[in-house]
Image 1 (tube, helix red, strand yellow):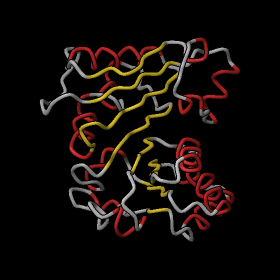
Image 2 (spheres, helix red, strand yellow):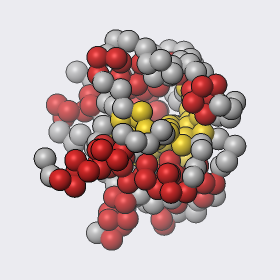
Image 3 (cartoon, helix red, strand yellow):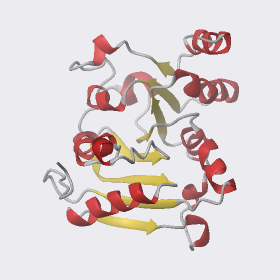
Image 4 (cartoon, helix red, strand yellow):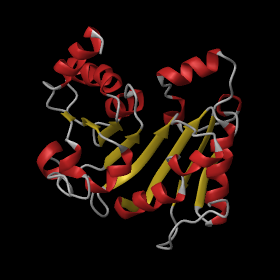
Length: 233
């Protein structure tokens, strides 16, 4: 392990706004803040928004700066990535931001019913090989986890440079009659009214410079029925 990474991990442990539970404390167990984030961590009753696979936390930070009346939690397993965003939060003194270093497969251990008001999934690993589709963050297994803690009117946003992931997610939305609020296969050549969609992540900027098109869609769940996909094994 490089000295730079060790230094970052040491620094990140000092940040009060970074939660790094050991897997034994959250595997098939509830984290002590589950259902209590507003009251005990943020100490307010503002809505809580998640960024899944947050990387360096560009969405988490930019949205937090824009909406002081909301709380934001970025989740990623890579501590070296989270470090950059966490350090920026520390330097800016933002009080409505938290980062959780954990696997998103364990997300149910962290949030209770109706605790989350929105989700951003920004440039996740597309898991392009057919046998890995079940690891996509918009596949039915994950979506059913999100349904357990997302409020009924909560919106899920996906941004990706991978057309296959975009199309896959769009198919799931349509097959399950979910409420599609917005969809484009070329974000920066489409008339868009939601300025939040134009926040750029580190990876997004790279993709744009490479000439890749950015796709985006936003949707809501419509009922309590489990999410399914006809392409599942």
